[in-house]
Length: 513
Image (cartoon, rainbow, N blue to C red; front, side, top):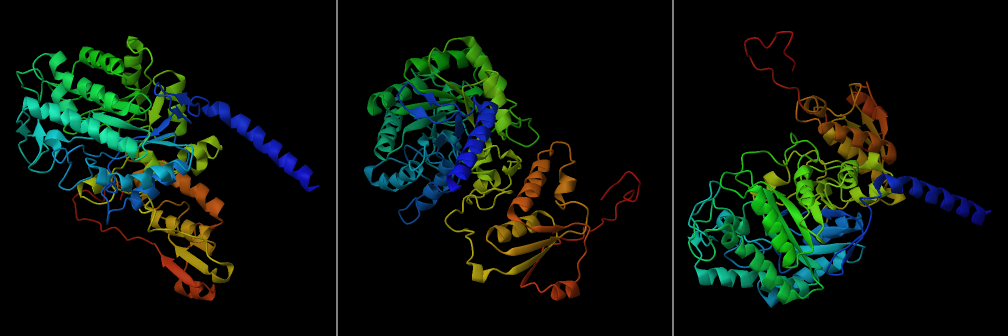
């Protein structure tokens, strides 16, 4: 009987898997790169600085745990936050760098953690150039960035060659550390981009002037890096396809550089959109989903790349969006960075047909980008566990430690507290006075440009059911009722009563608050 039941369950699971697979057949398809590396699927966790890249007491344990969770969650290829190839390339003083053999060992913990799963990992080599928030920063020309603090020192011709060697050396050390490859950051207005664009390159030597000269820095980095690491190590180049600033690259120049990069041996070309000083939104929630995949498709349609897959990026936060982009041929790979902050398991959940369980990135930038600018650990507004995997461990409680918990208030704080407590094994009742959960998110979600906030409420509706929380809507509960209910703990998450400002006209029928 047990064998029969098991066989039936296995057949049902197989049938479900078969029905799901076509839904994401492009996204979940493997891909073999020129270097011989095979990716399990077409999803890349794009690079972002998390604040975990800097070793703490000589250890990258937190960074290892962070990326391990994403590898376990099904990501095919992970790219680390930017690691400088020299002190001049620091993003800020004492930021992460990989320049000496002594700095290799902590990275081995990161790569070993990821390689426990069917996932690969690249280390991003990022030289900040004039974007560096320190007095050692350098650039092709001494032009201060509008978002910078210091005027950079112009690199001499000898300095340029030394800097190129810095990239190659850093890549060699990354290979020794167990990385499957490197991503060379050539977009977003960092050093390589500064050489490519006439906006920031006013040189008159062999590294400036014509586009051939201005792009030589990029191609020479790839050439020397490939020579240093061999043919069995992946090189991805992040190419700025839209600078979105005056004096940036023309489309014709972008196409020429893409072809030159392929000729020098890159395995993937990743799409970069906009310099950091650009005034055009590129990742905010007001940017439509997949808004920039057209530019990756445009490069594909040029027909100049014969064997280099293209990756598209920016505001791709759902599996169906990723699948649609791949299916219609806009790109060969999808990069999602912040969505992996919101939900490390986004790929596995899609593969298993559990889309309603995905905690969707809402593009708010409040705990990721804002934290980075404040020199804080990047996290996520809708997933505060992100970045704190070694500290915030919500582990199951022993049956004898199970307690009865009441949570008053069904806003985001109350929802998170309820689900977390229930998932640990406690008996949880959530009281919400209104007819729906979400609290003030229900106001935010109707603001034009903030439609993504609907996704968080949908996610919690699903999570409440899965975690077994007893939800009581349209219920105002008193202290006496809570005492009578025999609750061991009460979480008060009722928020605040907004102050009504004394503004003429606020009592008008068209004003809501």
